[in-house]
Image (cartoon, rainbow, N blue to C red):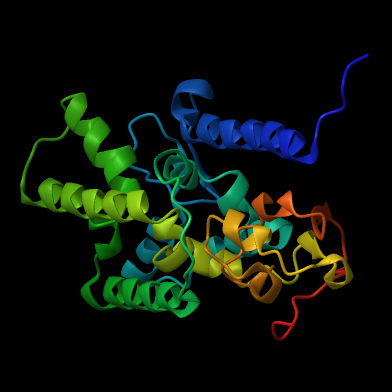
Length: 266
């Protein structure tokens, strides 16, 4: 008789499927052989990726501002994906998030939710002021999916712009090796936008305070370095489900939130 899969095994199985779907969509130019620039990718990616075909959320927002258009389309698209899963896209789908999970295994506590919103505001202000999507010139996802592949296949060359791109990418990689999901925690502007929907999306982490014994296993497992009982389902929570190593927590998809984080430690 086959043994039933544990919660951890089930989560790993489904996460493998969803992350694979994210990678597949990123390589949409090879798979679908049609442009899907009308689709704003629910994660950090780069339209300069030679085999991609979807629109980058930050690139789209910036270009609307560069050409002085009101960004109804990117805002509506991000609002839709945010309502569906909030930052769950970061934890279960985003290719750059998957890349960080592969290289960054050291889970350290610490997060500054407000920094991402500063990055978002500055990036959009610079795009509007200078009529140039300047954030794209330093975006680490752009290096991984745009600069490096284009250099490898001979479309791009090493120049001051590409070198700057690579240096920023290596700095982010270095910090990620030291601290898991560094970019997601502190700097990702797409995560900042999606985090606004974390409380209203049906995808939630259920936290039962009555089952909590204060063991902190949930916080130790969190790749975002959150104090889970205090910050679960907050703007920095990527709803990855790693905290469900503790029986006091579980992942659910529903229309109304059942549990809320505690206001202070017991």
